[in-house]
Image (cartoon, rainbow, N blue to C red; front, side, top):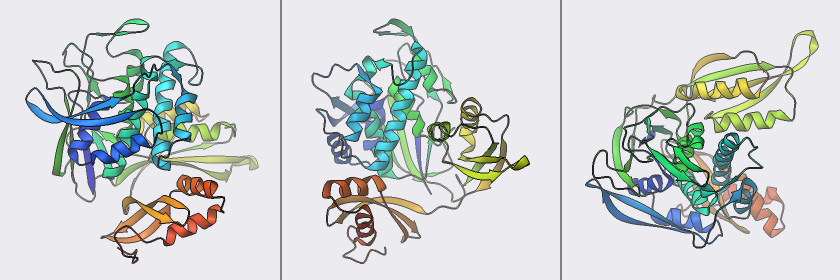
Length: 393
């Protein structure tokens, strides 16, 4: 099992995480190509540097003449017209929505009606999409993060002087362990706070054999205290680590059908590995739904909180289960009409399952004017990169 551990004891920002991902093994061109797929006037570059004597990678996002002040729909429009992988686009959209929901709550507005000032720039989008794509490239079976260092003091925003953590940052870190080392500056930004949503669980250094260690550098370089660097560790963990999940269930007979898709989205955004409905017949012949969510133990409370706030249930059932999973990897394959992503499920190095990325297939089918099922079929039988047509290993 592959584990990615994010040491956030010095805080987290978007550029720190991007730098750490590159230093731990993500090729810089993977993130550059991801940013280019946004089809917007933005770019990202990387350079070596140091903070407090620690060598690491500093990420630089360039968005010339970008003034920010965007609504959620503006960001979603950029994603919609992008050439991003479907899963990366979906995960990015979920994280973006979390930022707008937090800002909306701060200002008493909905996610759709609030517009962001400083966070409304393309820098924010690049940080999020880059982090999502970087983690996807490493393809860990589990992402573990430490407690988050907030720093201390205040920051200047368009609405005035705000105490650290800024209001939206605090809301984004609900359910996440935090602390402050009193370092006197903002160690965790709102973008960094939302990126903690990439973690499956939180805690100390997990049981693992480290293979690569990288550091992502923040902008500030304090002379005292902790070096402003996020540490990323990639390694192998015992097979059973991460297999245990909580199965959370609730039986519902009065949930409005329109709310059901929204509830599933919120559960996934809160950290559920999966969530789904099963139709059942309840007492007195009433139709109902059993909601099931698979959750890492560390995310249990966050998921239960969403269940109680967003559904009509008065209680939940919790059981423990052990998962057995295939190793997973995403590759690009060629069809007669264009390139699509293909998920591979592997056991002992042998490919036993293939699943084309649906959004990629749909995009290629629409662009080429061919049936979606034909693109899907061609993706399934396409040779894997480097397989010389064998496609079995």
